[in-house]
Length: 250
Image (cartoon, rainbow, N blue to C red; front, side, top):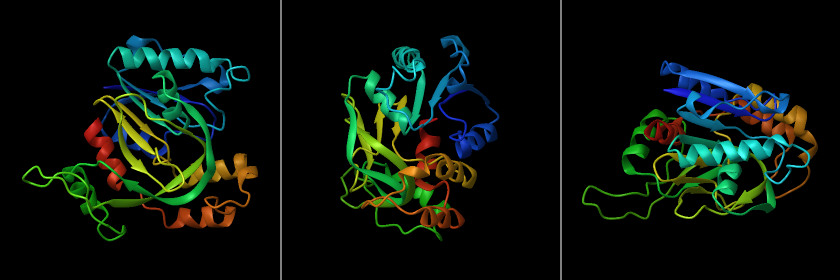
């Protein structure tokens, strides 16, 4: 399987996601769209990964490459390619699918819990075993052995850095939410996945965000300080429910 990553700024790399792809023995190529590198041809990839960035999906005047990137994402979805969008990438998927992308009432920056809404039992149980000692599990929402619904939930601490949000594309399934931003993750069919938070981050990526975008760290109900964010790097837990979801999707 051939993976291609669209990167919008130098410091927001695929991080842990790249590690997972390479462990599978798959090929991962990256286009630095911010540096003017040409977008890949449709026949050059099986999976398209669209990373985050500080720009908005609406900033085509300032970033003219956004227009061509939207066309590529829309074409990949039409042709049945697998497409994964993270933060700005999720917003770009929503935009090309006709959904609204707009300013969120509050910015979310830092380590905040994500509530999983529609994760299947098998996914959660598998990931729960991975994080048994390090993550507080507050239940499962999915189907029991008899096909009957449950009402429990699962929460995961995740890293966030966004000021805009999105409406779900038509036909999309909500996967995760937070009090500050309802539509945190969605799945569109079995091939398109949008994640508003940042499950791919490493300590290096987070330090890069703080260095380049630290001006956004002002007082706010869901904005942590530089010190809180960097302290969270030391105790960050990787994998878990996000990785189970990713592996099932792949």
